[in-house]
Amino acid sequence: MATTPHDPPLNPYLVIFVGVFAVSFGSIFVRLANAPAIMIATYRVGIASLLLWPVGLWKEKPALQKISRRDLALALLTGCFLALHFATWVSSLDYTSVASSVVLVNTNPLWVGMVAPLLTGERVSRIMAVGILISVIGGVIIGIGDFGLAPAQAFGDLLALAGAIMAGLYILMGRNLRRRLPALTYVIVVYSAAALVLALLALLTRQPLHGFSQETWILFFLMALIPQIMGHSSYNWALGYLSASFVAVSLLGEPIAATIMAYFLFGEGLTPAKLAGGLMILMGIYVTAKEEAKNG
Image (cartoon, one colour):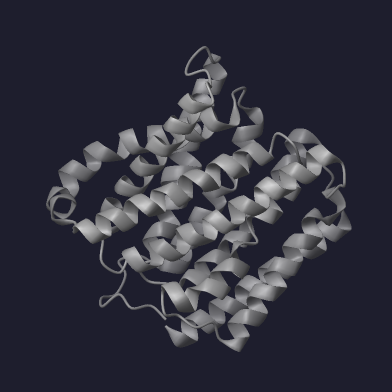
């Protein structure tokens, strides 16, 4: 399924593994930060953008200057999808549990699998579809005990689901653009656009821009460095070599690590059902990885 004409300098499956582990810290840092949801997301991608621009101007200035108007417009639109993903997902953590939020936001493989033929031309094979289904069911099992009918929790679950749809569009757009744009050029434009959209949302909703504790500022930087630069950038790089469907399924490894960390940090239950769900996710990732390697 990979269309990049040259061999990757790194093993893309290893890069995906590192990226998923890094992204798993996102929901934990959000819970620990004492700041409004929109500001958390704004500073996460904003700081990441500020850190990446000097590197981009040093390493890929010609690529940044030569980006076409069409690709620039598509990258800016992708940044809007990323911003809306963060705005909805981070907000969901104010209303529902880490497990429920992470599970619902990671239903994105379903949306990616349905829309991929239209946006990327990549058709999902039957085996890949089975792997996606196994992984998503495993994710549902992890969070099923935390789903509730209370209005606040239901609202949080809906926000997380909206975040999943936005994440799916973000991944699909990235798969298209990464065929033409270097990874660093792509993430700089997308993260910067996302930061501007989130900053606008923060201003429109009159969110406080400062006055946060030292610990929260440290968490902002950690979110920018670990889940954003290390995490998102890893799988954005991998989108140049692997299908959008496989990358989306791989990200379902996030609930496993996030749920384990939430158990130790917040006392959120780690039940036999969640362990079984985690095993199903790993099985689904294994099935899709074998299919990806066969078709690569």
